[in-house]
Image (cartoon, rainbow, N blue to C red; front, side):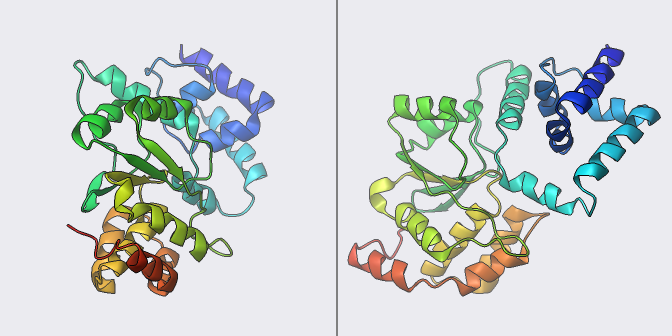
Length: 267
């Protein structure tokens, strides 16, 4: 079985090397799906580390794609939605669940009033969002297409989807545009959309920036805002995110919010 796994890896090296390199950043379940497997039994990374020849071949391949440092690809893992990873994680939870459970999404938390935050919801989270939270809306901050399975769930549950796609704040030239953040805030703090769930991919950086700006509308101190941001973003808190929260021009959102009686946000 292990030999067939190594054969699959070598086959991908020749036929789809870019996908293989990107997938090596992911969990074993994702690698299985990329290779057309779905057993939950393979320890892919361990198999690679035990074969010196295969390990060297992969290291040489990785250097072709990333001749400089690799940190930026690891950083992108949190920002880019990967449908294979989404399916693999959900499949792993389903295999481990003997009875039906009501499971919240990862990084789930109450923000204020009927505003909630989390990472990307998966099918095992749907019952929690529908029955426990009784969601009316979901605000998603990723630019990628929303999964069909999630759309079907929302349609059946009568949940409205708002998508305000944005890239995360990253060196050297990628920043969240203030006007896009303002559009997201207009959706998030409008009571007509509550109860609402805000999420990006991991529920850390873009969600953290949006929640940080909500806290500014609540007149929280920057010390409190940054402390909350770092708790959810750990261990990958970004200085640029905290700078963005501090420098965000809230003039327009405050004007619109007061005109529509959205402020103060009720606990």
